[in-house]
Length: 79
Ligand SMILES: [Zn+2]
Image 1 (cartoon, helix red, strand yellow):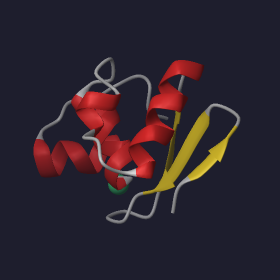
Image 2 (cartoon, protein in one colour):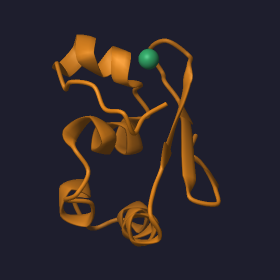
Image 3 (cartoon, helix red, strand yellow):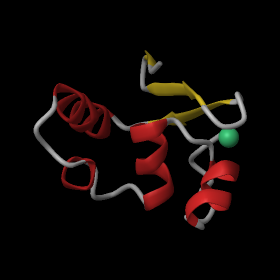
């Protein structure tokens, strides 16, 4: 379940149950809303974000679980 509060997107990780957050710029938030409406790939909507940040927006997996699952590396933008 995605929560958007101002420019902060929050999701609970399905694997560990921890909630993570990312702050998006206005442009990124618009692009993310485009993605949520469907029809576009997340890498097309948000090319400036790294793999880990995009995966979080897509699936809600936190950085730690993504590291275990996909070896996506860490990002300072997820907290
Ligand atoms: Zn997790």
